[in-house]
Image 1: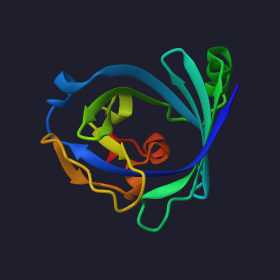
Image 2 (image 1 turned 30 degrees about the vertical axis):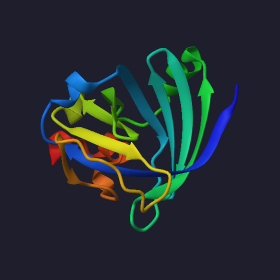
Image 3 (image 1 turned 45 degrees about the vertical axis):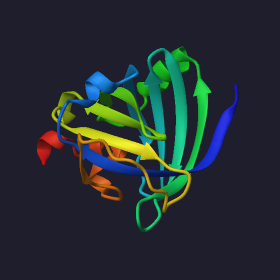
Image 4 (image 1 turned 30 degrees about the horizontal axis):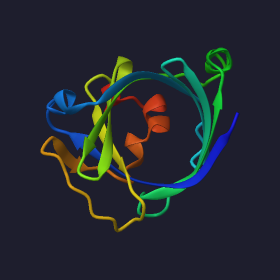
Length: 160
């Protein structure tokens, strides 16, 4: 199995309508938990459909645009076993992938304790990259820690 090491550059937005659903090319259910939610590094276990992943993310840059990310694919069996070891607050969401302009937006519709929260992310090649914004994109929340999945697992949307 291979792993991915990179500096992730992304911007995050709230979503103001469900028009994105009609534009989605792909949807997948994601269950994820955290073995560690330290602000300096998070360790996430994810079941994406029937694929498992373990991911380590470093601390975000001051502007919230970039951070270190290491990810390795693991078996579905291993992911399910590791999810049982995760701290309380497993995230349940459906991800919609929407091509728009030269980018693909990932829109996460959350369930459970985060029901009602819908967030879009777009990955960029550099921090000043210009991209086309769909009409359903709302307020930018890049760098706002409360929207990080690790934080949503500890302080869910329904407690705000």
